[in-house]
Length: 263
Image (cartoon, rainbow, N blue to C red; front, side):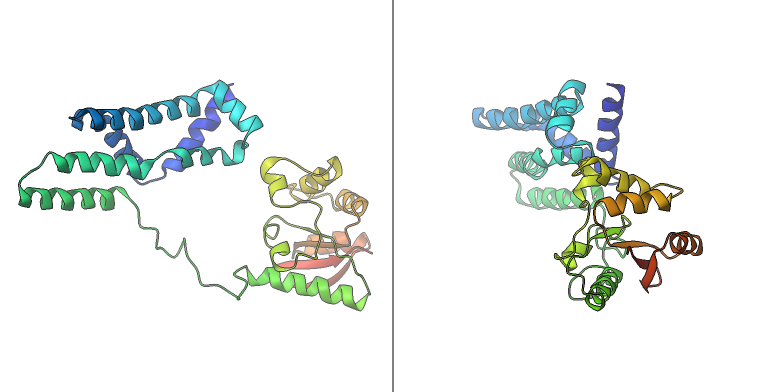
């Protein structure tokens, strides 16, 4: 239970980030009922604030959090719970109620400017070099992935191999089948994320290739059980030497990754 509480808090901190939009949302929830005057406004405010209170209760309460994590969406994507919070609606409604209280035209314009400034100041700029980069190719995936797949396909053609099943490091995992869906893999990107693998041996492959000190002999043993005939690993002298001693043939190199055929 302590682990669940820790996970929910860490998820909240990651979602909150460095901006203050969440603080603006909490302030809006607080002022909803204060700003409401008519019966209809009070009903709307009660609905929005009640929804928010219910959400935070479910999100942080250990029992409901554990049920959702274990049986619904998983620990790694628990942050998606925030998708059901109506942030824009709550903030916009609170601003609208505030504007309704002001009847002098110039004051209304001033309040609108203050509202816009509050949104800008509490947010963070997303158009930064860290968040955006130019596409390296028309597929909009890293060019190194294209290079790796081309090496695999070329070697397969030369050796008359119809089936290509690849074990690759995690950096390449989400992209290989985006480029070429005919290339098979022992597990997809959702396996490591959700802890769900086709079988125990696939999980052994994942654990072996991501170990701080890779036991290549065991990795190859597990990979061959799944009929994998290619391994893509980081280009490094020690890894190249170890795989060479185990009979793996290097069939291509991208500079960052080396492709080995498992004959």
